[in-house]
Length: 624
Image 1 (tube, helix red, strand yellow):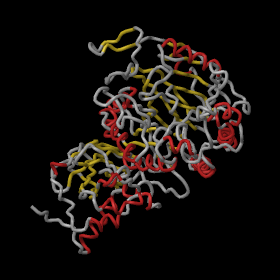
Image 2 (cartoon, one colour):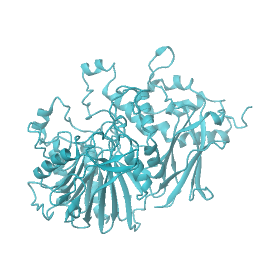
Image 3 (cartoon, rainbow, N blue to C red):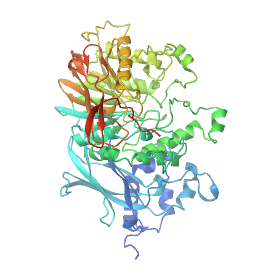
Image 4 (cartoon, helix red, strand yellow):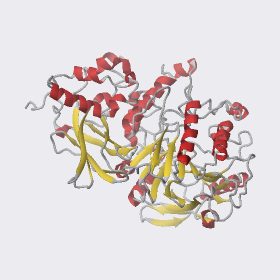
């Protein structure tokens, strides 16, 4: 039976159709200011004139990957879902007919052959029963954007919890109910804000227990993800190994990146985290390629040899494929790519804190450690011309720090990808400093510290991921400022770096991992705690008078389970600019402290009896 709602050329219905297409931000992905990088919506609508948005049988459509929310503002938030007839992802730049490659410039030809649009409605309510709907809207999606839906829900109140859902138009086919919280207004007096901080989730390496644990405890307001949301390399055999990657090998095309992100989003613990809390994500390197910089990456550079070996794809095209898929699938606001690839942005959260999210990987980073050039990077690491961020982002960063202090925000949280503090690795005599972290860009780090010290900007906390280990340090300008590691005097802030959700850390046994941590703490006087055995995350609970970091470890990620261990707790008092002594109250579960006790208990879980064993556990990760 023909739907009563058709695509009319009348002004009234045409305006509704226009608004509904424009509601879905992913047609402009990843930037409103660069239409050529997205889908040409006028051509899309023209090609489908006469088709019916409700031509789909609602029973054919499924919300394949739950719901998500992100980038909270005081009056709006981004909502996301995927509504599709299949789990399969769109192959828009793989093949059309006759095995002809299809890229963005072929959009007009592709959309003429693509299926009808899917119409969805979204609702935001003050309660789970949706008896108090505060805003709603309609959006369309098509295969052109992999059937994803990303909308901005507006008209919301600051620092308020809301519930949301999507419904296939004219049906009772509804998505799961999501929950999210708006951010406080810039001038709001907020007593406390909680974050769960994650990084480095490697699907074939283990289960995402950390995501689910934080969601089930329900102690935080927002999730910060500091990157490596996916990994671009492949592992395992589909149909044989439970966590084998899809596609099976290293990914390059838009279809590849869409498929890999979609696979990660089938993990129930990751889905739960997205469903329960609004996310504020930023990418690291593996969302595109390992050890990326502005001109390439460790496995693909702008050379003829790299171009030929990977089947004719350029660095720029691969990066564009990765970025487009990322913005289609992540609950993140569209960015202004006014001069380059931009994801860096900031959030004012009441008078309590400012959150500054950086891109120290893909925006405009100078050449990094590509494995084959380690010696060269060690020689040039102090070069003043080397930059992690590019001049434009760096200036913006310093201005954000100053403006935050001037407006009276108590705390400044800096979400970045890589460890900021010096980590002298005495075990590697040839390359004692990590050239792929801030240690490989010391002039850039010195400029940052100089800005903090010279402008007397207090209460700054750098947050980092990437390293697959836990690091907690006082933030200090070594060799330029006097620093007392026993008291913390001389510091200008702190750094909390977190371990991976599932990517490999120090390896071996707890005892061997802790021995490595002992050596690292001994070689780095500002490093107050090191731990590299456990996978997990940390929670950051921010109040006006203090900030508390609570670190949690998963006994194993080889199986899906809800267990975790409290590894260590750290406190920073407002105005002190260093970790409160005794650091971690003098005791941690694992790793090594500058001063204090380590329990070093070999705690493992018997998954059959759900009991703890104090034995060696050698299957921390999935083994193929």
